Amino acid sequence: MAPSYQGDERADKAVYVVRAEGTFAAAHYLSSYHGKCETLHGHNYRVRAYAAGRKLDEGGMVLDFGILKKALREVLARLDHTNLNDHPFFQENPSAERIATYVYEEMVKKLPGTPIWKVEVFETDENLAIYLPYGDTFPPLP
Image (cartoon, rainbow, N blue to C red; front, side):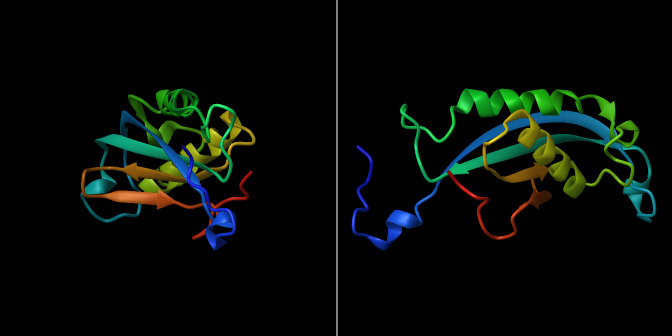
């Protein structure tokens, strides 16, 4: 049973968020970095994409996990086992921040009308970049 916020200030603020996670392995180098990352090296990236909504569909979901996961896998497949510096999107350094931006932009193309809230890219378990296209707020939500 869904929570009832009728007459509650939360009624207009409640947001549902769903997340899909995927991985890919790729090489890259960062020019003008002046460190070990300036030479070609690789990462096993982990990526999380989040979609958000205020309303649930007739099935009680913001978005079917399978749809979100499939879109993310298709986006990551284009990067898997490549040199990111050879990818047309990365005319500048393929940093984790730019990878997050790329994943966001491709997810929006694959899922038009779906509010993608944020994308997280882990280069390692400890190093993470987050892209929030709407800053610290949610995108316009249905």
